[in-house]
Length: 171
Figure 1 (cartoon, rainbow, N blue to C red):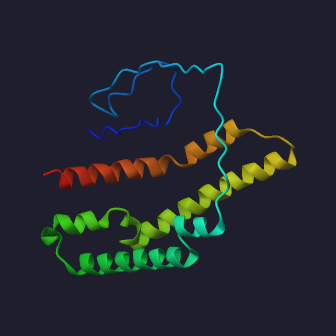
Figure 2: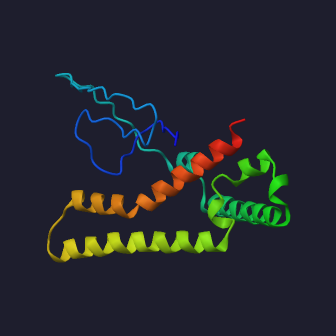
């Protein structure tokens, strides 16, 4: 499997200097230890708050977000329709490029499974947060570990999709 990522997000915490597992990436880069130093003096730049008009110009409105979401769902539906009526061997690279990011909409089973996993992930995190609140505890490390473990399926799925696209479209 040769799907080296630009950033390495390990599923297990690593000790400093430990290399990436060769199963993950054929060319395991060595880790360079870097340090950060701060100057004794810092310069503080005060930025005036933006006006409502400036914010409206910089950010999407609710209507623009709704339009983008509608367009995304329309594109996903059109792609699903096209792929369901086209023989697999005649699907072109342009069609595959158009699928990137819409995979979960191309099959109702995949969509349902993705939604179930997403909902389960959110419920697990919220349950632990609620428990921590009741016990008057706060453990960001525990929440982070739980989130990481709960998201492993997403990481694996994304790696598999990336590998599939790479193998199919690399020519």
